[in-house]
Figure 1 (tube, helix red, strand yellow):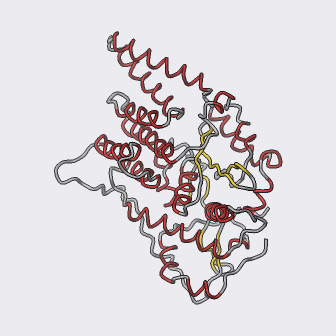
Figure 2: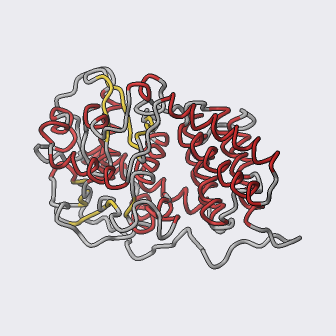
Figure 3: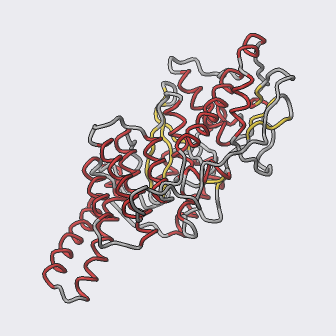
Length: 402
């Protein structure tokens, strides 16, 4: 694809202050082999314009949590504060805001030590880069009524998976990488977080699609989270291609056949909408409530005080097909059953066992099958090994220039 410039009128219109803000919080990574220059990703601006890459304030202050004036809050207090705000969103007492939902979920884990202003500034800087990329690059071979929306999605994809250049050979923004070291957050749960992704430029199948959706919401274009076993990806709908998938772990556009190729997505799972369906705004915020429960469980190891169950019930109230919340509730009840049984509390044990069994049966009826980690890794790598079979080549050419 030929290099696309930007006319002089637009150069004058771009604020120098904006360019400084855009780059201020970006953490530069060492260029990897897949960061080969792609001329379509050049943002052409005045050669006199400078970009400040020195000033890099972090929005995470892990060692200085804010202290309430009246008393020292414990973990449950922080998580309850986050839960209340998410519940208000889901109950329509305040606007649904996925970006805010993601932030307050992660803030609870760090005991209120994150700055929403700094988080927002970092998001806005990425939105500004995407906006400038769109101004500098025309959408080729797409002449349908929704071309503006497709172009916005192309800008987000480029921002996340390719190097964007500032005046010829000067890298302006480097792509986000996949974290192969701790992609499940087993060593450190916060490795699943969008804040971690923004800080060091690497993420996983949780944080990458979350950030994509946040940017899409900010640019007012549609992007839907979609679930697969142990996995989250993005779905879009266009006038030309219909529904199509965006896979951010590999930077490809896989067909539905690849998603189903894991072998752990049954027809019942598809029919019941637990996998491969689109999540609306309410379901996406509800997914953050599930994340809140997982974070609390990882951090406190507490399955018995009712918080995890409270979160699962709120998720299932607003998204009955959320299989993750259903299974987490069943697993939490199993832990409670084991405690009741060991304490010889027969009545409570029997009641808990009945609820647990009903949930596991319901999950199986909905099509749930547990996917082993080794199978997940094999499935994830298959998209690169069998691109001709599993990648939509037309969409790939449009967005990846290949």
